[in-house]
Amino acid sequence: MKQVRRLSPHMVRVSVTGEGLRRMTSPCPDAYVKLFFPLPGQDRPRLPELHDDSWYRTYLAMPDEIRPPMRTYTVRAHRGTEMDIDFVLHGDGGPASRWAHGARPGDTIAILGTGGLHIPPEDSEWQLLIGDESALPAIGAILERLSPGAVAHAFIEVDGPAEEQRFSTLGNVRTYWVHRGDAPHGESVLNAVRLARFPDGTPYAWISGEAGMVKYARRHLVNDRGFAKNAVTFTGYWRLGATQDQMV
Image (cartoon, one colour):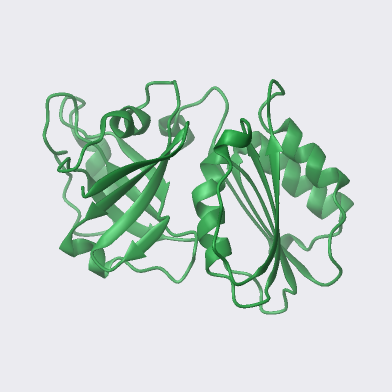
């Protein structure tokens, strides 16, 4: 690992380096990778055999005492042998957040990837992005790769003003920061989307974050706004009350 930088009170950016990163490419701006973290007392994680598509079965078959915690994370930026990954610092003590809290230059993790979901249909005339802080790295990457003048509206729910970020983009972007405050997770951004006026033209929507919010946002767009089902990409990054292991 090369660098650790705090972006906001609950977001940290880790820049990792390695020759293997040069081979990890994805045409999608919301590219994601699998991260393997060392167990307590380890300098680096012990990996399963990764020679073919059966690696996940091999991973699950590893004894608990040596199987490294694994999580899926967005690639915020990729520059040859260097990759930026943004971590939300939760208070849940999960392996990724716990590692990111104490990360220092020289620490080692393992990375396997990549995949991606953001593929707008060719007839799309504007984009709608909806997410919470867990989707913020992907939303930022999508906005920063928009073509000049491309229209996008982004609705992002975060705790408060201190968690907002700025993006450099050539697109025609309107970003709506929705502050959660004491409201239940996802309620505020759903209300904002339901009350929003959207541009004319054929839309493409990308929705990610807490699984319940994602479900209701998609339902609203398809049932109430007339979005075509094949023009809505959606994925639950996490679920209230569940770990990522339980969502696999």
